[in-house]
Length: 190
Ligand code: CUA
Image (cartoon, rainbow, N blue to C red; front, side, top):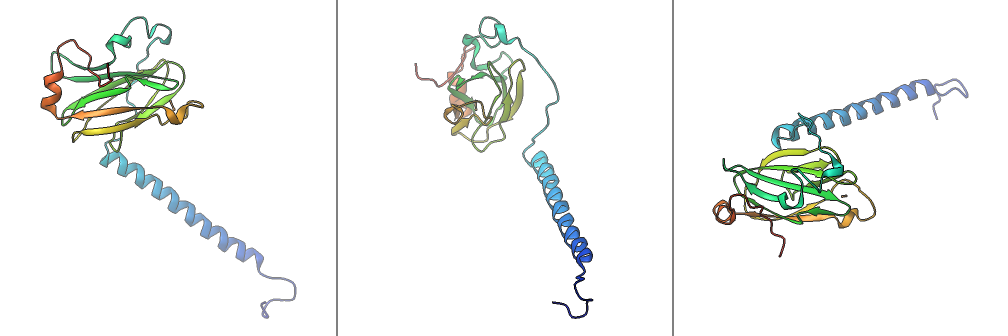
């Protein structure tokens, strides 16, 4: 209780302005933190916004073209480039187990058949959405050998939490010994 104020007239206007100013600083601090996080992930993890758009016909996805079943998995081109092709559907990835070499750039090309999915590979920067009718692609290098989990990270329906695949990162020489020209590698048990 202030004895200096006239009876019944607390300085509510001044109190409100001081409170609003404090909250404004909190909001500015949150925005500055978010921008700093974007700059950090952009530079440190090489996270980039999509720079191109490539489409694919969902109706013929399984019938012809790049994403027919026999073309899914990991291939090594004549130029030595490693490419992983995969598709996502409710509620699995195809292939369910992906094999890649360590220390070599790997290009992922993927799409979805039914709704929006996505994936992240363990604690690496391999991370994308998979959208019907669009081809998502990125190139990354897995620094060390080992097995990683690859969960779907876009809510895609009631089975979302059970949708995941595995990624086996092999030492490069072991991977190259298994890769044959024209073949599609995966670690799905046959
Ligand atoms: Cu597919 Cu979540």
